[in-house]
Length: 315
View 1 (tube, rainbow, N blue to C red):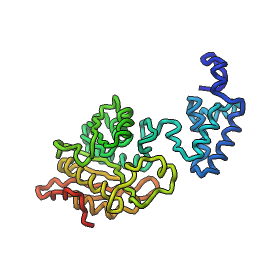
View 2 (cartoon, helix red, strand yellow):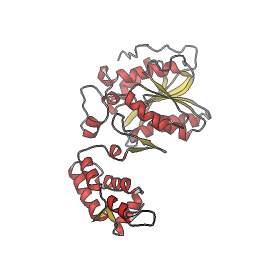
View 3 (cartoon, helix red, strand yellow):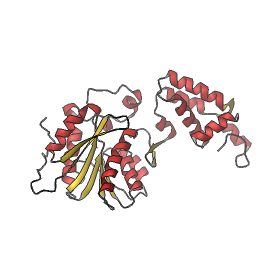
């Protein structure tokens, strides 16, 4: 909606929402403030904050700035919060992930673009094999991003999402309502007990940051929940190893796992997947060309190895 007066919005209500400073000038000032604070995309963030307050698209914000519209009154306050490196998504309350919009905020990991590429690996596998009604598990769903995207893009899929954090579960319940996704509360090591050998695909973005590697980015270090970041012992690979073991048990013969991990962890994750019983192991780059995911397939031969139940790769 425009910041200008309109029949749909009484003038007195407008005064609460707009500043008499011009939007173009306010955006320039916001861009400078955010750039000085180290925000990577200061102009984009300034426009998105204005769009959030005005209830319009970012493109509409640009048009309004050109036509001399007023700035939303609360823009300076939101810019100040963003300059303190509060995540943009926490200020707007939403995050885009592939084809879905998610509600996010304190207590849940904000989904990242690299995870969109991980989902694409899984969807490419499903489509290449003509699986029209895949049974898919999302281990450690967080906000529900992966599960929601799969449900939206593969209408015939039966999707199960697993999450153990109470705070993240609250966000996932909100995002997965009316999607048909089954949300399970619990540790992914045990949550799928009784469903062994029934899944076609497992997708997981488990915690994998080494415990002594505090992220440099304050938006990650100070606002993403630690339980969604740190992967435990073995240089952060305790949780990825456990996810690989859980996936190996859940997948049917011929089933497919894709696991997100840190850029330097690829070789170790290959060993983890091999020791969990996977074959056909492949590395997958993100959109910047960095190796950020590894996949594997459960063999269909009778000689399939049983995974080590401790998730120990013995690397």
